[in-house]
Image (cartoon, rainbow, N blue to C red; front, top):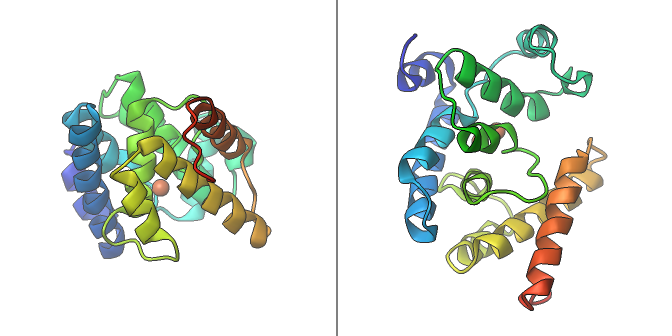
Length: 192
Ligand SMILES: [Fe+2]
Ligand SMILES: [Fe+2]
């Protein structure tokens, strides 16, 4: 089995490669800032979009072969994280559950996310190549509070998904509500 870097070179589009390395750098920076393992953050980032350039019919084949939930069929946006988590364990022998969960939930988030899960979620949303309304505010928040920045980013995703009538995974709602509760309990919601 090739290294993940060799896999990235061979399988990802140029745009996705640049994104992946941007996420890796950003995730490492957050790990240093918030006290997580820089190594784990980099590993999770390098693997997180390994199936993001894979055609839909191949993704559907993985969903069936790996016995994943049928809601992932014909939904590349949701399927690429869970598939990557299974393959990196099976083929790359990465067994750290926190790294696997960070990759598995990087698109949706979930309730009670670990530090590493939040780091990957946020690095994915605000790496230097990302451009969308609100990204600068998310970057500013990310230097102050990982929780506030994640909540900001999730609120934006929920609005975006609803406005476009896309499928909203319940894990995203749970992730957002959980962070909201947590920040409100700390008296740190600041109108978010
Ligand atoms: Fe992704
Ligand atoms: Fe990504």
